[in-house]
Image 1 (cartoon, one colour):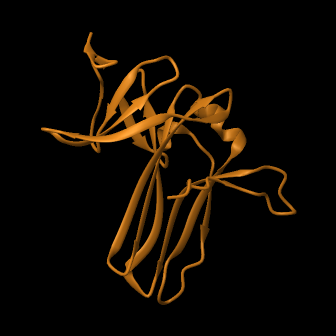
Image 2: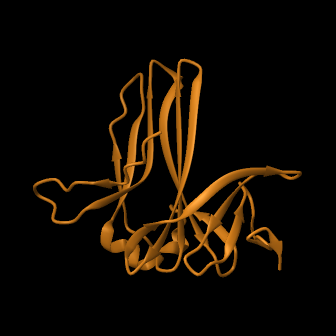
Image 3: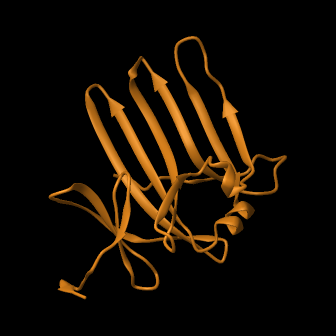
Length: 160
């Protein structure tokens, strides 16, 4: 599966790049869709919020081109807005469904010096269900689940 493209080239009248933070496109029937969702993870207090949360204070640019049959919705933030998310983790969740086939991908980025740095992650399963093990730049390992985040006590297979 190819990487999620999260940066759009600016239009001629724009001077800044935009980062895609949300997308919902449907066609045919609403069971055929292409979606991107973004979650902001704070590794300090182990919390996660949708990027639309007002407490983050981001200026979001919305694009809505729905018609009577399909949805075409996107949201962007300017690349300079990444400075407000310094030392946070962005979780980009990609969901694609077509003709009964579904592909899901999750990519994690750390915001360091107002730039996105891709983090290594792997999807695993334990007795509580599915989770992603994400390795942070400082060496910490997080277990990221749909509704919770915890620090993984295993480092190199040894319990600390």
